[in-house]
Length: 118
Image (tube, rainbow, N blue to C red; front, side):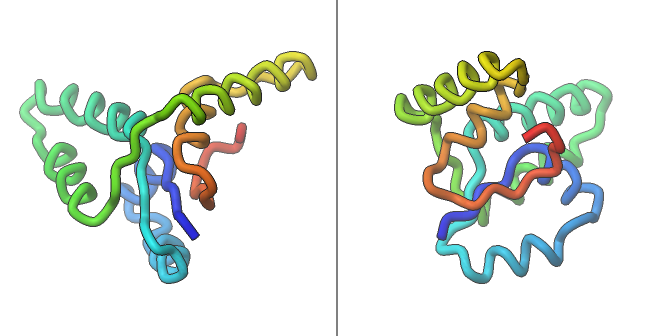
């Protein structure tokens, strides 16, 4: 099983939450993965803080990357996200594009998220 953690889960982990859940879930996972898009979101926030002189988040992201695999978004993931988005719009539902792209970046996988809109 592959384990994919999204940005919302990692931000809660940064706050000290869900470490036990991640440890438990990763025991059965061959690999713990993060989408390149989550990496983008985390680094963007870290660089904003760096401008204020706070380097802690950059160091934290760097430490995450030592034990997580970063996965790019491929054409299959984009196609799946687009199909899911189109279907949701037809049903009158909306899901954030970035969330759909992150969720479809590693297939198949178990997604750990704190977003309630997924």
